[in-house]
Image 1 (cartoon, helix red, strand yellow):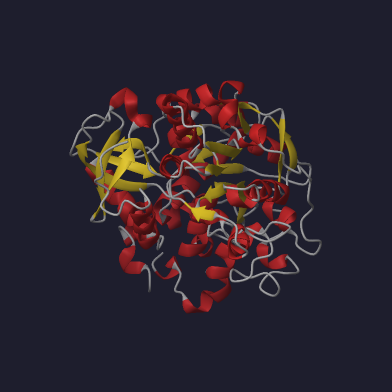
Image 2 (cartoon, one colour):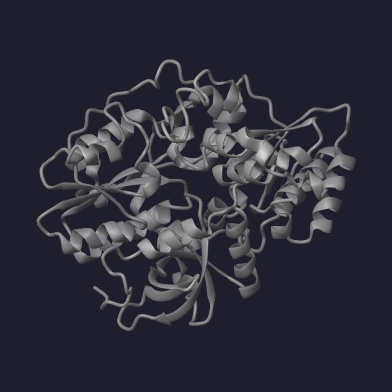
Length: 375
Length: 98
C-alpha cells in the first residue's frame, strides 16, 4: 500500500481502471505507445501496467532526449571541450551518458572543464562572468527545452556576448512519431501524447496522426489517474472506430501551444535536412540547427568536430528497445553488464529511459505494492 | 529532462522586463519570463518552470496538482535541486540583474 495515500481519489482510480477493463475488447490486443520518457518513468513508478488487462500493451516511445542522442554527437561535443579555455556546460542528465572515450563526468575527472548547469541562461551567465573562457552549452531536448535555448541565444546576440556558443542537438517529436509509424516492424493502435512538449507545440501538430494514419492520440498528464483516463479516452475512440486528437492534460496544455516559444524557436533555429537518432537511424527534418544569423554562436560553425558516426556497443540492444521491439529485460546486457550504476547504453542513464525505469521499479517489484490493491 | 516545476511569481525584477523571482518549495530564484511575453504573469500568479524559464501560466489549483504529481513521481527533491541550481554562484538569487 506504499503509494496508496499519495493517490488522489483512489475510488476514482478504481472506477477508471474498471472502465479500462470494461472497454478493452478481450478479442483484441492493444498496442499503445507512450511517446514521452516522463510517461515511461511514471508507468513503471506507479505500476500502471499492473492495473491494465493483459491485452493492453504499453510500448515505450522515443521521447527521452538523452536516450536518442547518438554517441557520435557526445564525442563531438567532448572533442570541442578539449580546445584550450573551452568549458563544456550541460544539464546533469548528460553527465553520465557514455561517449566512445567516456562520459562527460569521466572527462571531467581527467581534467576537462565540464560543468553542470540547470538552465541555458546559466551557461550564458558563465560566459559573462568568465570572459577569458569560451562557454559551450551542449543543448539537448525536444520542443520543451528548445525555446529556452533559443531565447538564450537571442540574449547572447543582443548583448554581443562572443565567448558563448551552443552545440545544438535539439530534436523534434513529430518526425520521430512519423518514423515509428513508417517502421515495418512496428504495429501500433494509438498514442499517449507527450505532456510538456505539447505545452509548446500544442495539439494541432498531431492531427495528421488522427487524420492520415487513423490512430487516436491523447495528450496526457503524468499521474496514474491522468494516464488511466487517457487510456479510457483511447479505448473509447478505438471502440467507436474513431481517430481524434484529444487533450486529457488541459490543466497544463493549451490546444494552440505557446506562440512566443514557437516564435523564439523560429527566430533562432531551422530544420536540419536529416539527423541521426539512436535506434531509429537517420530521420529527415527531425532536428534543429542554428540559423546562419546566429552562426557566431553555433559551436558546430566555430569548432572542428570529428563528426564520426559511432555504432552502439555491439552487445547492447538499445536500438531495439528504443523502437519497442524488445522489452528492456530482453536485452542481453540488462541488469548484468548494464545497470543504472554502470550504464552502457543511454537508456540506462536517464530516469526517463525505459531501461533505467524498468530497472528501478519493475525489477524490484516485489518490494512495491502496485495500485492493483486499490483498483 | 521533462520536469516542469510549478512556482509562484513573487516579484518582477525592476529594469529587467523578462526576469522574475519565483518561489518553489520555499526556494526563491530568478527565472526568465521571456516565453510568456505575450501574456506576462503578475506577482501572485503561478507558472510552470522548465530549465529556468517559465513556460506557461497555470492556476493555483493546477500548480498544487502539479506539485503533487512531482511528489508522487519522487521528483520533489530533484525539482528543488534544479531550482536551487538556477543562478549558479548566486545562492541568494537576488543579485542585480545583468
